Image (cartoon, rainbow, N blue to C red; front, side, top):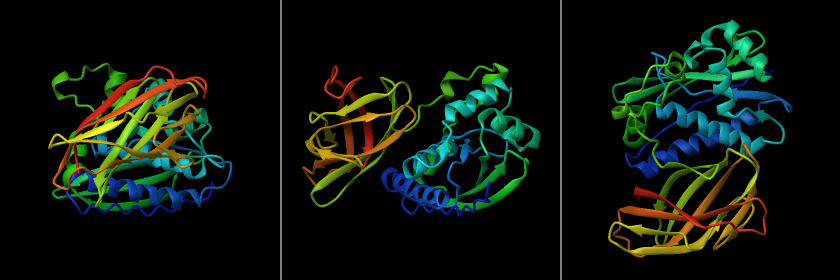
Amino acid sequence: MKKILLVFVLVLICPTWTTASNAVYDEVSTLGKMISGRIPKGSKIAVVELVDLEGNISSLGKFIAEELITELTIINGKEITVIERRLMMKVLEEQNLSVSELVDPSAIKNVGKLLGAGAIVTGTITELGDEVRVNARIVSTKTGEIESAARATIPTTGVVKKLMAMKSKSNLSQLTGDAEDPDNSQPELFFQTWQGFDIKLLGCSKSSSKIRCDLIVTCVSNDAVFYIHKETALFDNLGNKAVVVSVSSTKMSSTSIYQEIIAGVSVKYNILFDLTTKDASEIAALKLTLSKSEKVNREGTKEVVDFRAIPL
């Protein structure tokens, strides 16, 4: 597999969730475009969570890995194969391995053989006071050697600090059977699972007349049709209700939208709402009215999935 040069530049200049999360997403999106142009057609790669120096997985490491997987799939999904993270983690569990143990060449080769992957993206995140150092490595599964590496330094502000503090359940604890302290467990920020879909809210922002919310929806079970209905609404921290102006994806736009999503594929949606007042500083509740069906002509039962306390 040709060497992949990663330039990992993640710059967060605003301490708010919305600006910071969008900055991370934009940089990972740019990174995905760079990588996709350097991967030979027909290649198969895997991406794992970035860990700290002790082998622990934070939500920041998980977030970067997830966004990179999504971006590579969206950009070049027909020409390269990006292995679903759950499949990768399942193989690690079956082999009694943690993510941090992928420094062992023999482990890399074995996992690569089982997955049929030519390379695995691994990396570490180290907190250094008011900065986070990110080191990413592309490791060949044929030789177990590092083909390329990249480094980034990002400020520990706002959302980055929150994500660093939120420890994901380590696959090492799953393997050893160690019980996780329920008092220390925390859900991911703005992420929910609904009816076989992972719904990730990237953030919301306001302009002079509109509020925009960005979602990434991933089908994790069987192929299905995903609907976002016009009853979707948001309520700001001043008590005002905003209605949908448009919902759009890469292929369509309307006041409501539906799209058939294949299992393992992610789709990005943008939802626009009328801005009721410029004084609002937070979305008290974003209420998504959704339904799912197996066929395009059937809407299914409508349900509400909501997110709370979203900064603007």
